[in-house]
Image (cartoon, rainbow, N blue to C red; front, side, top):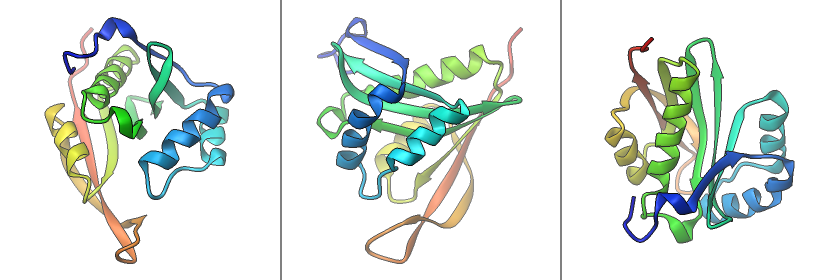
Length: 159
């Protein structure tokens, strides 16, 4: 975490429908191909764990993760572009990993654009390993589609 921001100023709380307009604003600022309002609504409806990261009561990021039967899949991690590069993405990942541990999850998966070197570096920092490639998974302007790298983190469960 960047020394400028104290973790005591951060709040990681459940996302609800009232958050979605702000989530969509951040999503559109952060991604060329953002998730839609419908996708976020569907995630909430089916019970995925969607979380908001606040800094002094201002939404600066969020995440969506699905968890079932010993496995989790991180579906979306986003930090507002104005707050990227300060350790907030790492804070979100660390919080998600603590959550998965509490739910006795031993394997966590995620996909990342092959071109997203900052995210790949972050996932490597948390000991995720590349386990596959989804060819032509993401839409892309420069070429028809971009590959997704599939990462996994497997850890022994503690009792």
